[in-house]
Length: 261
Image 1: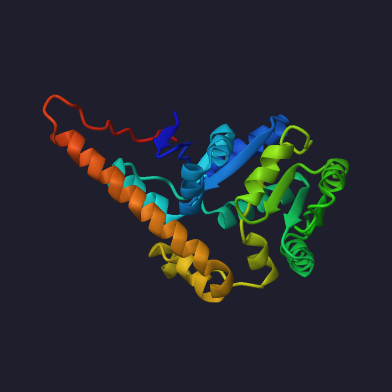
Image 2: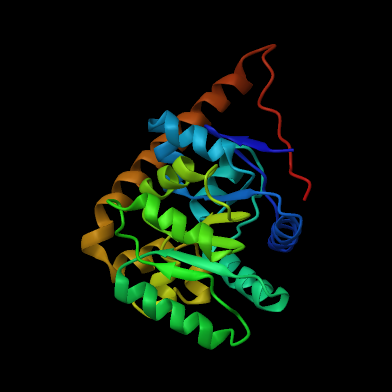
């Protein structure tokens, strides 16, 4: 059962269940679009109906981002599982190597995606990529879709910035022949060595976004300042409404449901 959170609905699956369900779906050629939700996703979905509809149409929706985990605790009392996209990508590449499945990498600058592809192949010597292509193809979208379909790939990982990434996947989800599609954010930058992943202790503090901001301040500061501030307002408003509802005689408070993996 999906959990409603602001304008979206979240499956809230732990990592192991997520990997198992994705791999089963690919084996049975059951088309699956995966989404991970962070603070920016919630803000974009609040402001843009098209984004909201896209996320709620995805087949699996998990949480990636401690801001959403914290919001779940404050507003619902739910403890969301955090499935970081970069970690899920690693697990799926491992599974693809083991089962002979071919991933396709789409996104990033030309040099970044080429280096990411080389590093992935070096890390998983038994893995055969279906192909890769940089993320600057907006004048030739159909040709790129045809390339992906001809590749016979089983997985498509899309490393394009939001909300363009989501709109691309929405536009072509019914045309793509790939059984599994997932947005991976800045994961290709990490695989290419262009940016560093935050240390584990920084991740556990929920400050991975700040670590990334310090590496790319000019590109990311406006987005993080805007989305984090807007999300804070969303939480304050929601917690204020919940307190008023609980204080009203005869008016039930919000029901708390914990997800079942």
